[in-house]
Image (tube, rainbow, N blue to C red; front, top):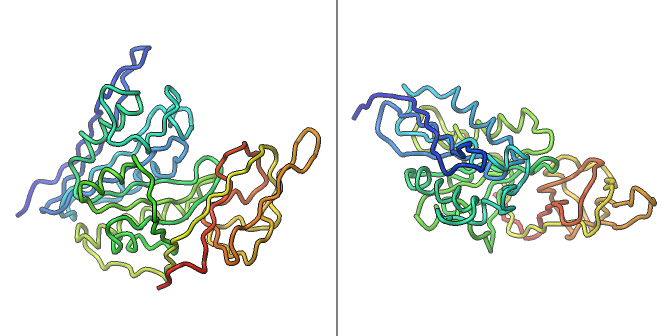
Length: 312
């Protein structure tokens, strides 16, 4: 059955701020010429992960609705307040949007955002891609395996992660409970290189080819490792973090419990902390591989255990 292709944009008002300004969610809908699934893509659930918005913009500009079977819904800025302040959490209540789903229309403003995203976006899709990043400083690179391994692999990232204990209250927590095939992508951060943006764009297009939403051959994945054990290293002390050696690129393999970085007191020059690799065979998943300031409890590094990885 052939349908009329259209592009539609709407602002879904969630609430009003104290100064009278509406707080809204921007949703683009592209209707293809043939019937097919409804794919939803979101970004900026965390306000400092800006690469996702640019990935979505490029996807929007390059899609040809005359070739699309189905519909694609795009939500480039899921947390406008956190984006404005370039913070991970919503500044008005300091809640993490990706821990409160399905939300509460009578709750904190973050819970109201989650509830509106559920009612106006997540409840209207058949397949879901959620774009994340390392944030303003760290760089990251992997794809979660949620409830559809083939689609996660089709994003064609070299490292995937099959968590034994997923976070609660995420967008994917909600879509998984609804039986919606879901992909959570972690890409880029820090300087947000163009190559990472383009990998995100191509990943979405390859998933769409896999779903037969757009024409073309599905690009085969590279050799992929599935991590089942990843350790997050958070510095106990703030200060100046100095890398011990060059491992700024994610995917770097580190053998043994080598020193990753040292943190110094910028006032007294005292060495406050020595951060070491946790496993005998490590792969860098998230890194602050450059000289930078850290606060206690920041995301410092994420390293995967290669000895427990599944390889294909």
